[in-house]
Length: 139
Image 1 (cartoon, helix red, strand yellow):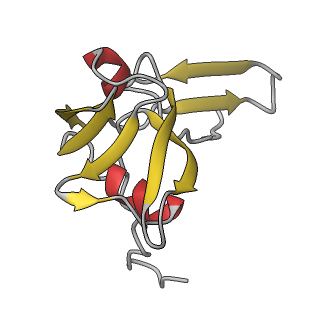
Image 2 (cartoon, rainbow, N blue to C red; image 1 turned 180 degrees about the horizontal axis):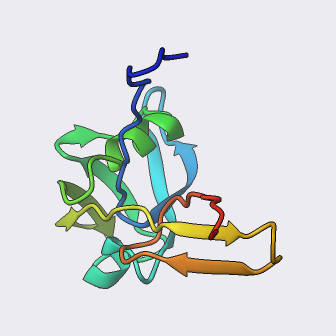
């Protein structure tokens, strides 16, 4: 716990591209195939209209995803908001490179005033991603 006047550890907000990875299927002794399970229509991938559910994810920023765990793939997809991420997607045997700008997580703040019982909710601008619950008193 930081002392008075000192800052505690900071966490870096990570942006994403709005895709969810599906099952990782083994295709050889050390090779895997990674399918995209879903694409958020309001996220960078969905708004590009270039990535679809069922596409194979092959490369993220020049790093092959074959043999990587789901967690490792997720770490490659995430990064600072407004940074760029280049994906190589394979569909129907054709490779396509798509560069996307990572979006900031969508912020949902929910406030409850314990004195009056009113509840308010607001959302910030930005693409879907993680959300934060923030509580404050309006008095």
